[in-house]
Length: 185
Image 1: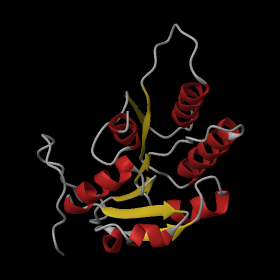
Image 2: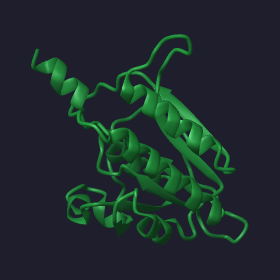
Image 3: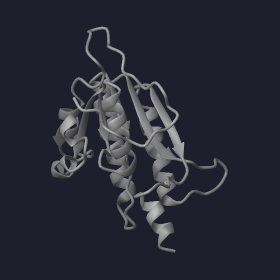
Image 4: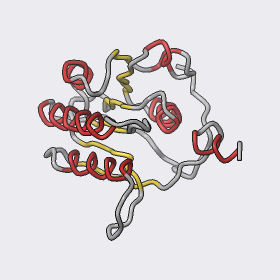
């Protein structure tokens, strides 16, 4: 298998270790075609993880250099049947999705998706959930989007599956939505 190139960092030795059954861990990436997911997947593939993605548009996954090196399930992360199909035999879930819609309804969509993923991860014996949330102070009123991200984190933490919540500030890098907004100022 050809090694994928990716921007280098200082993470050093990201390497998958075989599980008790001798297989390499299987990870499910939700948000694979987003900015973070598109950069995480090559690292996971190169490290030896068996990568699976759930995507609303599998054709878009195929357009990435790593598209042919992961297992692709078609569906929306808010659809319980699609999530259950993708969650089978998964060890770790990377939850990298959140609504950026300005209209009403995004909070309910985020809530539904988090609830569906949390339930499915628990039922399928997932070993860990890694959630990319938002950096937020505890003592101020949050924007609706940050409030929703906090709620998603709380839902995942309450799932009964060990969950790591990463709180990122603004993610800026070439091609990111934040970078493009700043670039056009």
